[in-house]
Image (tube, rainbow, N blue to C red; front, side, top):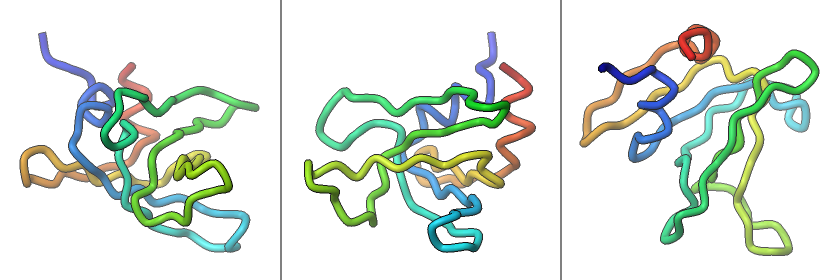
Length: 99
């Protein structure tokens, strides 16, 4: 049985995610992972107010006061995922319809 695209994203080593950031008032691209490094703590995907929300570990973010680099992307525009050095890309809205 083949895996859904979302399952593949969750299992990807690392990824780039692009989304509109209200804080910056523009589309940003971040480098992240689904699992907090050196732990088994996973990110999350959920629907809030009809929008997809993707919680991921941002490698380049400044840690908050607790040392966390978890970031939330609402309605991501694009995700480029890495599997063993091979990158694929696509629109997350399409991926989420496959669940």
